[in-house]
Image (cartoon, rainbow, N blue to C red; front, side, top):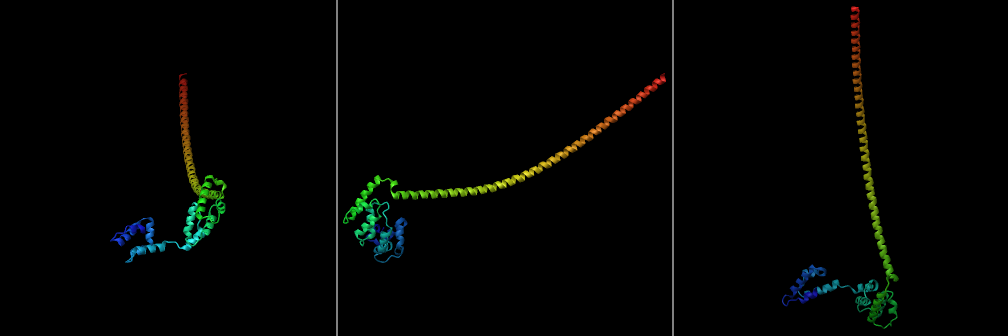
Length: 265
């Protein structure tokens, strides 16, 4: 950001152009973070040497101290997936000019993969670090072409960690499903219990309704049967009275016929 502003200096409007470019690039990514570190100087720039003032402020505020670099060099820096040559460059960058090549060689050799350490240990003590880094790169390439991951401890450990992670995920997922099933089962049981109670009450009401209807039908049938018996007895009485009347009339007619015969004879 600073070099871009320096290249864009106008012969007559240099100071104003530098500040404008810094503020313009303040709206994107890393430039915004960098400008935030010197925003106090941007808002209130000095009368003279604005570029040098911002440059010195950025260097002092953003640069890592040599003490932190040394701690990272001794305790935190590892090769990872980098080539040995790149790892050596990183160690040199952290070490600066205060660490000898022998110490860098020892640190780098101890932190390289195990299969590279015996090969580098057989080299002469006065072999340049760059030569050792080039040799380590070549050995690493050859080993990577013929490597079977199952026979190396780091791959086995990585596979174990991955397997443990997958097992934890599966157990967490199974536990979540089991808990969800329990909650669903409890809800279903509660719902079923309410449904059973509802249908039980409905069944009792229906049973009572059926009993009432049956009692009403029985009462109607009994009243109907009584009415039929009454009607039948009335009919039987009427028939009996009619037969008695007919018998009396016939008896009278027979008497009249006998009296008439006696009178004739």
